[in-house]
Image (cartoon, rainbow, N blue to C red; front, side):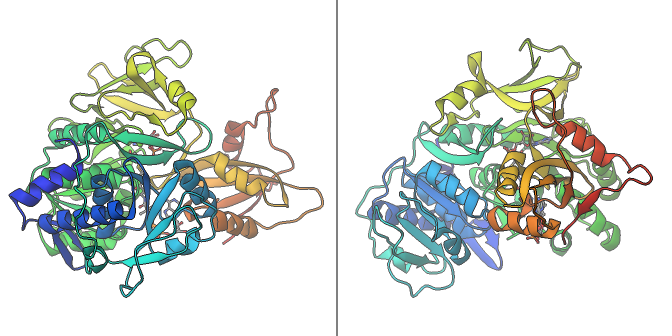
Amino acid sequence: MDSIVEAVREHAWLQPERIAILFEGRSITYKQLYADSERFAYALTHWGLHAGERVALFLDNCPEFIVAYLGTHLAGGVVVLVNAQYRQVELSHIMNDAGVRLCVTDLAGRAELISLAVPTLAALVLVGENTDAALFLAAKNEAIVDVAYVDFIEDGSVFDEDSPDTQLELPRADMPAVLGYTSGTTGRSKGALLFHRNLVANIQAISEAWQWRADDHLLLTLPLFHTHGLMVGTHGTLFNGAQLTLYRKFNAASVLARLRAASDISLFFGVPTMYSRLLVEAEQQGVPEHLPRLFVSGSAPLSPQTFHDFERLFGQTILERYGMTETGMNLSNPYTGERRPGTVGMPFPGQEARVVDVQTRQIAAPGEIGEMEVRGPHVFEGYWQRPEATAEAFAPEGWFKTGDLGWYSEDGYYTITGRARELIISGGYNVYPREVEDVLTSHPAVAEAAVIGLPDADLGEQVVAIIVVAAGQTVTPAALIAFCREQLASYKKPRQIFFVDALPRNAMGKVQKHVLSAQLQEPPVRGESRDSGKGE
Ligand code: MCA
Ligand code: AMP
């Protein structure tokens, strides 16, 4: 099997009437899923998409997302994943960096995109209600001039007229499949380029480790535009010919209600914030009688407290695993065997991990903290058009430097202890301080800004900004928060703003964020007041 879409085609042959996706009252069989994907691929090819060209998906969860994903692969295109909350700053960077030629989005996405200068972007495909629309097309090499409304599952008419005059070929394992944007260790966000073979190798390993079967049914409330929801949840389902109940978004009460309604859900994947919210909800509502056979947590550290509370209330241990956009899943607690709280287990089958000393790069002994490195067929090919960043990211012999710090025990369990790079993980979403600082310092009233993560009971970490106001200016926390919210995805906005006269700096002039972090976590000394605001 060379690609996920090939697996879907096989299931469409072998079990055409098997339901692949359930979404808001709609059910889509494997046969229909493949036929729709094929129709989308024909339309792309007919329109003029060439192999290797980039198609961005800028959409919230819906079945059309999956159809467009598979269809792009079938047309030989490369999918660019875009968080649906991204605003002008992030969108402009990703669309231009990836040289996106066509973007599948909705009306809200169109409103964000239409004013951006993206010379390569020639067409938008709109997923939405309005199907009496014009043609699926736009002028090439010009600003976006035309837009098609496509509801390709409910009404495939736009594509039907494009009769299959081109022969579609399944993607080969060595063709590029996905660009996932991530900041890696430093700098502006970079596109991690994954080939079909990386995706297949990883999902094979995951399926083996978690015993994913055709009769499994995943309740997926994670967004499809990130690795966790797409390359674990969706790939696993489609690869194994299993079933997916897809929610537009997570809500703890709805998840418990769904589990209570029927006993068919066998898998649930989430970020730690989802588990702590499920716990709060279940304390009030009670725990459903039938539970999935497997609960998996990842994308951020699951606290041992949440692990134990969940075990006490739900009677099940959450399986914690560790992954990255560049690699997919790397390490996992065992399906059978001890799931050890606070650890991320051991490498998936066919994959390797090690810890190296940060300075000497020598392999660390058990118990010694160093940088985690991973290797295997799942590891990405490199950063899109950034040979230097790619070279820096790899140690000799194909070891990928994750930028995460950790150690391993004598009996082979790995523990992540921190990050070598500056990264805040809030509710499972990554926030790079530099990006928020750049927006803050572009405000006329801000002279300097430092952004850090502080512990947060719900989100794990929350984004906080420390600001030096420009001479002669005044500004409120609310105004700065609103300013960030306008330009960036809303989850990146600072939740609190602190005003200071000067930022602490070391002899080299570098801002000492650990000092700020320590100061803000200390209880204020009596008589001292910190100038802060939540701005809400
Ligand atoms: C939403 N908001 C947040 C977050 N999510 N603020 C901080 N951190 C967040 N994570 C803000 C919104 O911007 C909005 O602000 C307000 O909260 C309400 O938005 P809503 O959408 O209703 O939020 P929610 O439903 O409470 O969302 C919380 C969530 C969500 C369900 C935990 O963040 C989520 O789905 N997280 C999962 C992310 C994920 O898939 N990560 C995997 C990445 P305002 O009102 O101002 O607009 S892949 C990865 O990390 C690696 C590879 C791996 O190992 O998996
Ligand atoms: P991304 O940049 O979206 O690829 O996020 C990957 C990062 O999420 C990793 O480098 C880790 O810092 C973090 N991460 C993922 N899973 C875990 C986990 N189980 N425990 C701690 N950190 C995690």
